[in-house]
Image (tube, rainbow over all chains, first blue to last red; front, side, top):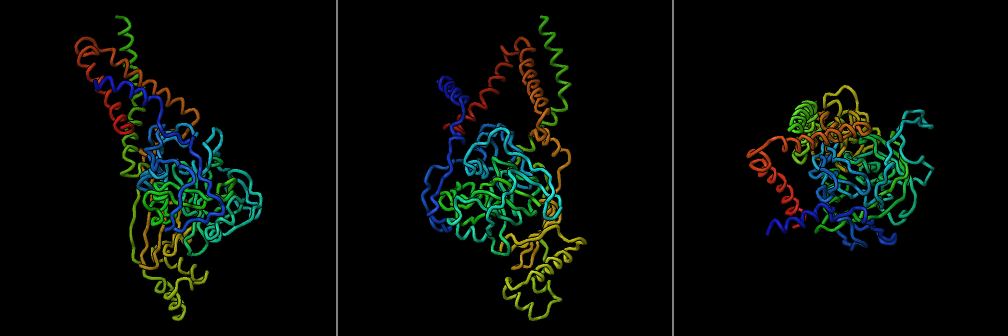
Length: 260
Length: 209
């Protein structure tokens, strides 16, 4: 009896997983809605990708997650359309990717397409003559904005293309799909620049300086990913994650960046 | 039967051929299987060192400045911050200064002595302590992971695919080579069935129930 039951179940298993990251649409929080303070709760406008870790990502044989977090974002399986890469260990001393799974692909708003996610190339900084790494589209002179201002008044910049510059305090080591730019001074304000699917963050970028241009978005980050960012990457406030509800965050969907 | 002789020969030769890669994938497989326990690529060494509060580390400054900084860290000028970084570096016995240093929070001054996260110091002014973190590649294991996880891409993808096909061949040929009560019709069949049922049961229990 059990064997008869297992056969259709096995067939169902082979047909594919129930979670399809490509069907997830990022939450487009209206610009008029202010970014919630950590204790303010808002209802998500749409269902976010539900999995909090790599386990829910499926698709590919799990790879070690990179990025110093108990569940790294690393991130085991396939992210959106990015084809089946075995999960890789985090480059930077983090043990798991569980919190990373799929979050930045959902934030990017589209699946990874083959041929994108390009690597940075070495170029010469026209201003200083120094060798730098450039990735994605060439910087076009967008309006510069400070991280502090962006975090304080995100609705002012939502949907707009801006330029940010600063020190890289964290990055995704697994898929290299985002990096965090730290505000000047001791405010602790930080914004994540999501580079996927445009380009990958160069390896070993933490501690370097960067400037990037992209569109400001206010998104809802799944609680698992938010916890991962806060606990393992020190990006965001762990206290802001409550009751497993999504957390609003300001991100920049990068079009291009330079790493100094 | 002639086909069995051929199968035995192929099984033997392919087995020898992929011995090296089997060891690579096996070692890497174990390493990454425990990624929730450890970093399979790098070893992480951390050490907490007591350095003292900023006012102490900036001992060359006038008393008034040190008192102002002790009262409010934001009172530090950029030059004083630079001196603080120098003092932290000296206190740790370092000869060369960091490649970069910046605040990663109100109470976390991070100094980067190598590219990326390889050699960092996080100084905490409130406690006067510094957390030194050094990350070093695990020899051989990291290289095995590099191959196993196909970091190379390109042509290696086909090599890895061929290896996988060889493993599949070894599995199937191994099952067919043995005859009689030890083979698929006997003990071998029971073991093979157990090996097939186990992953199915685990997947069903963990993912669908």
